[in-house]
Every structure is written in structure tokens, then in C-alpha cells.
Length: 106
Image (cartoon, rainbow, N blue to C red; front, side, top):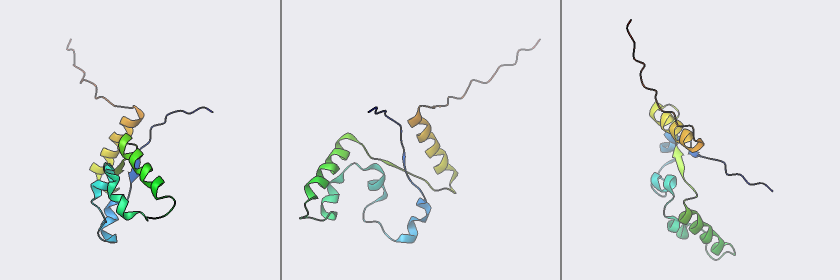
């Protein structure tokens, strides 16, 4: 079986509608950066046969930086352009502005 690495970007869309659903359990940065998953230990059900597996998966994602999210508010131009830059960087399509052409007078 052939396994190729493909770039991907996880997007939390409709972030502008977040206020309609009340307060989050954690800060928004917690969900987007996923740097410290030890907080999930208290949120996950304990005593199940998968509790040790859940914590090991959390440690793996945390240690290798496997998960991260970008936010997107569709009506916000800045949010959309930031996401486009992230996607371009992930795919290797980095656009460098060309130097302005000098007019040569005759």
C-alpha cells in the first residue's frame, strides 16, 4: 500500500455564530491550538475500557503536534485571507509579490 503525505488544514467554520451557543468549556485557543490535552482527562468518561487508550491518543496528538485548527468567519475578510494564507502555506503555494516593473524611457 502506498502512503503519501497530503497537506491538510482543519477549519472551525462559522466561528461568528459561536456566541449563540453560550460559553465554551475552555477558551477558544484551547480548541484551536491543542497544546495541552491533559484538561480532557477530567472531561472524558473514567472507568471505561477505553479510558487508557483515550489518554494515550491525547498524549500522542499533544507530543507530535498532530492536531490544530484555524478559525473562519465567512463575512470577515481578514479571517478569510488569513485562512487562504494558511492553506497556501500548507500546499506549498506561497505567492511572492513581483517587483514593480521599471519603465524604460526612450
